[in-house]
Image (tube, rainbow, N blue to C red; front, side, top):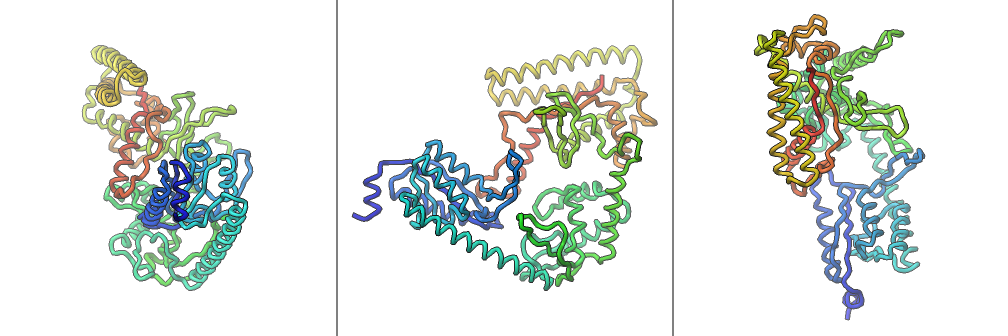
Length: 523
């Protein structure tokens, strides 16, 4: 009887978890982890173990460390592997009795991770096995051998990282392309960059539009409407457009920024040399565009000392409020965030790239309705009576909507009926709200703002003007908490096409946004 047969006969049926990992998979094909999983499942089946869970970490290094800040405020260096930590917790909870990996260096290459695995094994009492036989922690000798092998693997990874860094520096000295993601405007051919005939001229076009005084908002809105995607396959934002315009690669310059001791990449380049690939724009044009972007940033951040207020940058700041505590949400980086001055206060946030277009679309739709039929705005007794009736209808529908939500959360109706009824009531509320807006008398708060021409003037106006116009019809935008019955992020399914994933993710985000954002229009 062979060793495997003896182990199978001696061990009762047990639940096993499979851990698979591969360091680099830039194409996200997951073929490496698929092969490892198949071998691990076959190994578990040969021993009579039932595979209860599979923890996959594709394109994840077990050697590279990152600087993180602990809850205590201490900054430390750690290898970040969420699935590995989830597997340890799964085993510690007693939900499986065996861990199966393909090989020792697929499971651990960092001594700290190995010690965590050893501690979990001692406390949880589970068995550790690998398909190649290189990972066993049954005896003190097995543990000592694992520590030696991990130390050697860690040294090998460090040597490889050093050689790769030196090769990258040599490539920078020679001005050759370092590989990785291709800059927008180029494509890779035979290990170097050549100008893409479609996207290459678009870079020069964007440069000229900036020099002509056009805003990044107009350029990226135009590109997104034309279906132009970034190198990541995503829609453009002001930030990604700015990074593309400031990329020294487009002026034919190879930049080298070394990795610092803390694992981060240097912010300033150590060297800049002429690249072997052709430039999309000349250096003077690139510098002029950079100067324009710097001047715009300086103008946005400038405010008169002693004036007590900075220049308005965002048209909806002050209108977006947290529904939980009622305070105004502050625009911080890419999000609007509720920041309470008290300890342990509310910290609700929402992405500005999601809520700003939604608010703008709703506001413009209202102003366009006013433009189409401005005669409905009247201050007569008939208009007042109509507003009273419409206000009563709005209150009744909002009450029905709240009751519908309560019935769903209490389990009185299923989700399908709740979604169907909610969509009908919300659509009716929006139609009534627009009709109510058209019966309002012309407001007098706006400085020289004609409500019938706001929609046409919107694109060419400043954020301050947009804020003043919006305040005429919109009282507040309430941001609710993320729905408890919906995921915060949509995971990519195995073998799912990128276009299908993006469509499913965008639909999910739109549904979440519709439930989180509530408009409070002026009565």
